[in-house]
Length: 638
Image (cartoon, rainbow, N blue to C red; front, top):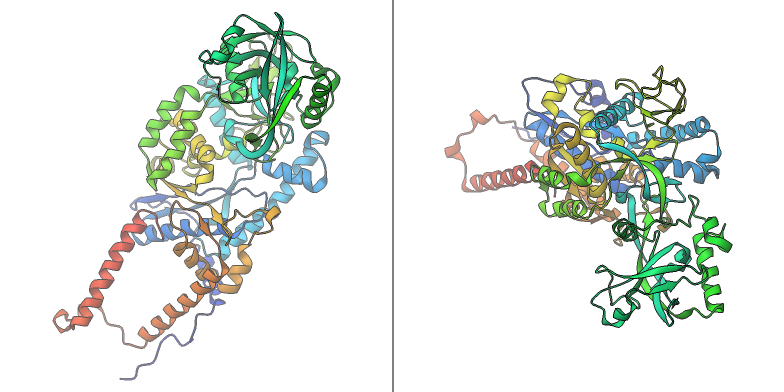
């Protein structure tokens, strides 16, 4: 018998990958078809932001989804593997403002929206090309887009349902504000940046004589101070009770009060309660019933209540007031400290806490319910569930869902021009109140026929948090919805647990009373070879297409599988991809060697004729198969 390999090529040619992609395209493997007799495996694929080019870590993340999609397909499941593109919200708006040197609020809304849409189309095309070139089974030929009229219609329908359940309310209250993004942001959109700051020890004269020293990092808020606080257990200040202090420069009296939240060991042990330095200040103002004085406007400038500092930025005002305090002899000393400053996760600019009108979704009263829902979901790995629990426990305000921006799903409300009564339409249409004719003839409260449309949009997480509902046919395909919801798995990074994961659990629970999915698969962060996050300003971003064209999609996918332990951060090193390509070539040569032997069917094998080595090899193979089954069934490719 002549033994000639059926595989003639001596090495794997990555050009063949394009031939395979063309074959899959012809076979239309990407389009989902509901098959009644097959169990359904649904992947709540993260819709990536189309506000920039993908780097290798993002591409590797999606390659892993494809691996367990293919595993379950081989196990006989019908796979719903949608591809989504998140095209709403601040990311694209900030990018456009930087590119064109404009501010959204200073230009025509329609013009700005068109600029956003054009750039989104460009980035979306790049993302889809990467998905296709990696050989993903995801339905990239028909991706859902969060800015499509169909998706926005469903987002608005869920808002209308929650509004009708009295779970959404409008209020003017202290909120977190980004002066750069020029909008309200949610608690989940605040990050903390460690930086070196200065603690200023300032003398406050007492109305009965003497003085007390207060330490603060924000002297620009002196004019917003409502009281001085000290801990009742702090013996140093027991004589201050019932005293009043005179605010330097502004010369008005404030009470000095005991409060257990004050830390005696910080600074002088006396706290300046001002409106507002942080969320704790907001809480204390509410508790103690003080009326706030807001000195900072929406542009991050000092307003007229700041007196002579009006028009200055926060930093400029701080420098100016410190100089004046020094000249007047009020600064006792300065101390350099390490501090965590709250910043906007998009602009990376310090946030302010101002009073503004916003729409809120109730969440505080549902904290225990969401934790119970989380207990019904299997977290992989389980220890990352604690990130979610810690976030829920720490929530202190309801979710501000309105944004003073342009490119997003519009809030479907019209207000009566005469009495201000809000009117919410029936679900089923995509509404744009800032430009559409109101779908009401007269005000239900006063009978007026004139309305003013809401100009704000939703927080982008309000859109993306319904992704498991949207992909399962919610409000559109009842047959699919009954079979697909709750979806099987939510794969995502640990960096968006407090946003995408939490908001999804909250929204889906409020709408359906159920958990959104059965499994949550949490990946670590992709880093460069030195262990640093990939950022443009670091110049360390590696783009996937050049790597894939150089080494092949299979080499890239093998690296993504073998170097990324589920739940842990991982590093990209091109040498590892090169090594993966060499390993694939070894597999090819093994396959080529095997292809030189005649094909033997199972029923042609006589087990009694197997040698001891044959049996040992088969035993090892079975053990390997069992191990692979165990790991893949738990969505781990490592």
